[in-house]
Image (tube, rainbow, N blue to C red; front, side, top):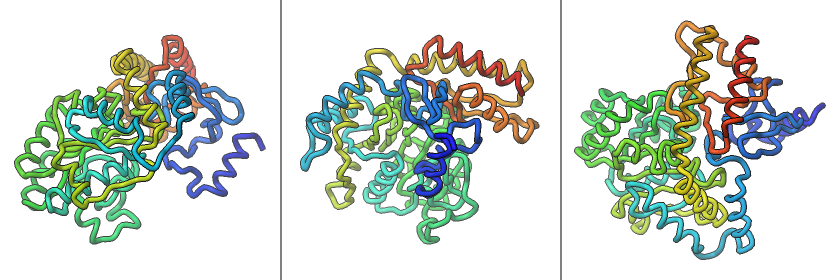
Length: 404
């Protein structure tokens, strides 16, 4: 038994589902790495020592690169002062002020650890603020919010009917709608006038540009119906723009959630918005977490923001991402492979074209893993992917495609 198999078997034995993050469990064995031992820059290494140029980036949080030296230095500096205290830390105040200047809707913010729980917090605040119960959800907003019939139980999978483990009475209050489905949203607001507390929207990866018309429509209908508009910026924040789709498309929600990318892999989420809504926390809508103001993650976030503003990280992710995926798509077309990376440069989705072979995606990914590249159905470029890494990626992907 090699090292990968040893740890994979241990995960299968002791971790429910084989991984604490469902989407991280290896499927395409033996080509796919079963476990990762370490990461540096844009590369990761499995327990057998195999090296991969990585475009998974922990499913999105790593935007500057693994083990980034400047971020590490600030984490270590704070570690010597303490991790979490019995009162708010200095960095909680500093990070909150900084983020209120970055997040377009944020007059006040609050910190948690994951994006899903922060969306759940926004739903609670919206219900408290409006006195209403119903929620409209667009896209995948985290496992805590997979409540309505047909909800996405993960980014790639929908529940058949009410998700397992959800009470019928709760599920009836949550309505799942597809991205850019204007007619269904109009029907819901017509059917449930003065009942919808919040509309929560996460952008669609492959059709994100449609947000140019869709987001203004959502803003208009929510304002008209006095419904709280919540932007799920878990992926898009610190990737499409520092302020996410709100900044990119110029539409301001009432509340917003940021998580992946905000601290280069340290566990941190932030939700914020208008004072009148956020202050519901002081009026009985309690949202509290012992680790909400944990100082190591806040130190990382402050350094990440500094680097983003200094080095134009967003511009780099946009330009290099667009160039890389355009080159790969040209190779797909030239070699007659029915796949395409579709969407914006920082986070496109790997799409299987109509009439393509049913197993083409898995066949391609197996060859890719075998060549020393780690991709996913949504792949991310990070700031550590340099020219030589991109060139090596293109060369290895060409070989992988030829072997198909």
